[in-house]
Image (cartoon, rainbow, N blue to C red; front, side):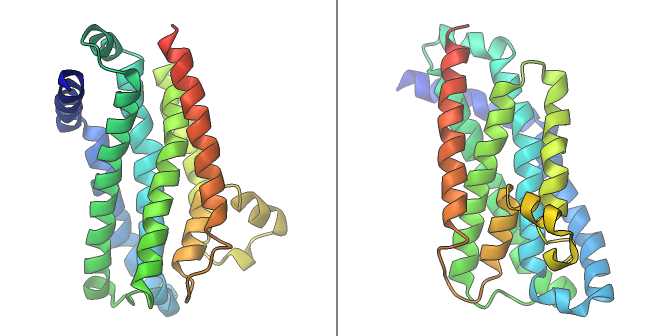
Length: 238
């Protein structure tokens, strides 16, 4: 119990001094929403129908893939790891706490967009809020699991951002939030299906709850969770 409380306090201190979390989970998504929301609704008025879902996917992808890996690198590639071990804290707790923290931040930001988008750009609230929030929560969890792989696998912290961006750009560009997927070449459409953002956006924009766009997210999450477990074992033996 003492080890758990120590981990909670330590993670809280790291979050308080982390500018990355503030920028990637709040500042950049709000700026993107303010600029691109106006552009989308002016050029394509029909985008109001899916503006909330589009902005949510961008927020989650940005906050997870670019915001989380540096936090994990700070734990497992620095003296923080030694502090965990010296105080009897399981190294897995660092992964758990950072994911929970990022999950809460992304959920809060997504809810903010859900509330202000109809006011700012006359965006349409999803016809089935339940489907939207199930898809949102699932997408956050899956995106964080992939981001965790980057944070645990990349040995050189200087390269963490590079790998994050290499995943972030195709995730957003091929997901359908920037322009309809049917405008893309078939090869790009197939490539987009490798990323959770595509499945999450498709599911959140559905008019009814169906499983065919949700189960790929579960598959990705299970695979990512297994890889994280393997990477943690390797870190523990170093």
